[in-house]
Image 1 (spheres, rainbow, N blue to C red):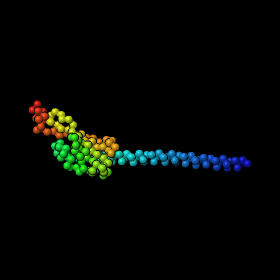
Image 2: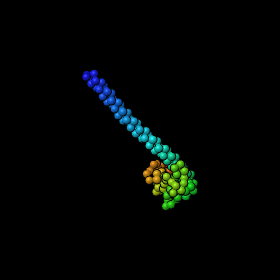
Image 3: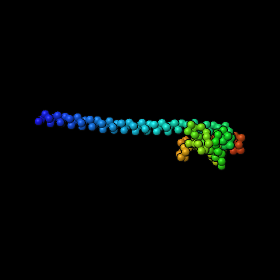
Length: 156
């Protein structure tokens, strides 16, 4: 009788070991999956941020090249809308300019109030469709020939 109890005891211990191993494997699997899901999410966010930086830099370059003329900047980007001293540029899922109805992202350019010393500034913001800001940059143009710029040069 003692040998059968010993065999039953061994079987129970073996089943307990298998159950513990399965539970441990399941926990490790869940932790690993959560890690990969988080990594995938961060990769997507990084891609959007990279494209937002590129798009804002492109708009800032055009803004500076056009001397701060929002209408001229608007003509460079198809589907953009210039209204009330603001420029709206709409982007699709490939980060190319598109019409408002097809957009997933938008870039808003608005001129900041004039400061002294001939510096013209514009705030450029890259937003998702739900209006959450991804990136923003300020573009500055110095015009030494403006009245404020001449005052600053003469004051020196």
